[in-house]
Length: 128
Image 1: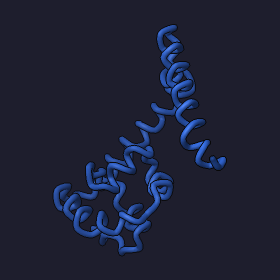
Image 2: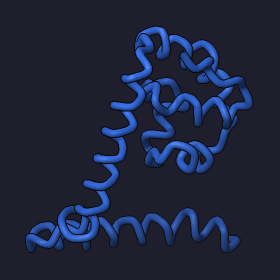
Image 3: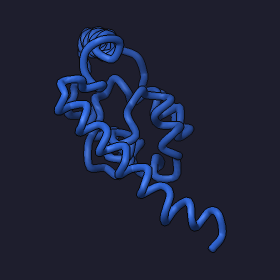
Image 4: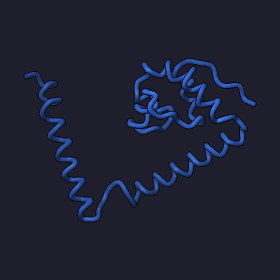
């Protein structure tokens, strides 16, 4: 068995299982690393930044439904071949959220559309 196949079929599942077991143990001990401390501060800062972005977008007075249709019509079809890593970097989405958006299973907030249009090489929406 070649190294890459061994890594994919044996090492990664073993690593994932060990990681989940460790995370479960930490949570049972009341030390969930995904909450509180630095992680909580980062999440709070990110949430505040996103709320500010949505507020600024709302001030533009654009129709959300029309913008979401623009996403489905103009952006989504061209997003299919864009790597998740590029979507994540351009928007700040998590890997899962980027994947859901790229597959059309979730429609992102229009505040992200200009960044996505830049990725797919289209033209930006005209500013009101």
